[in-house]
Image 1 (cartoon, rainbow, N blue to C red):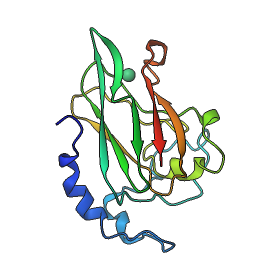
Image 2 (cartoon, rainbow, N blue to C red):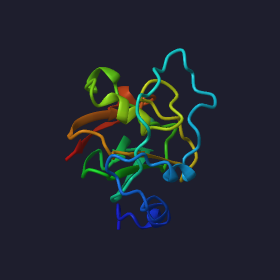
Image 3 (cartoon, rainbow, N blue to C red):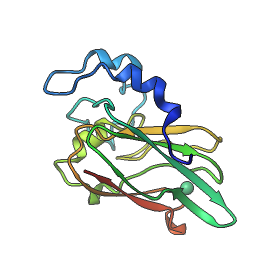
Amino acid sequence: MRFLGFAVVGSAIVLGACSGGGEKAADSAAVTPAPDTTAPAATTPAPSGAAAAITGVTHEVKMVGDDKGYRYEPADITVKAGDGIKFIMVSGGPHNVAFDPATIPADVKPQLSANMPNQQGELSSPLYSNPNESYTISFANVKPGQYPYHCTPHLAMNMKGTITVQ
Ligand SMILES: [Cu+2]
């Protein structure tokens, strides 16, 4: 039962109307807050693409910190084109989800960035400390590859993993 994505059925229905392809997904923006509210524009380059909605499965990754250490469960995960990952705060926060910009290819960065709302730094999610808070990243239109990620507060404690997009 660990990472079956039942909790996301609601959002999958909302987003399911977007058929992908080359058209602009204007209608799917109904569930996505406008990204231009309080972004620190000085350090974050403007994403050149529009966010691409999840059209496939939303996987779940738990963010855990306890007496066994800090970790993502599962840390390494493989997703298909159009899938998303919902990172759920479980214990031991604050946690976040961050990609080292130096490890993300230049032709991947714009779409990945567009798919990460409310960034607190380049390719970094907000911090979460309360159980059941979550952060969902769509990998729709993100090119296939292996993308390492980490928790900024717990990087030194080896809280990291790898997302493989097929
Ligand atoms: Cu952490």
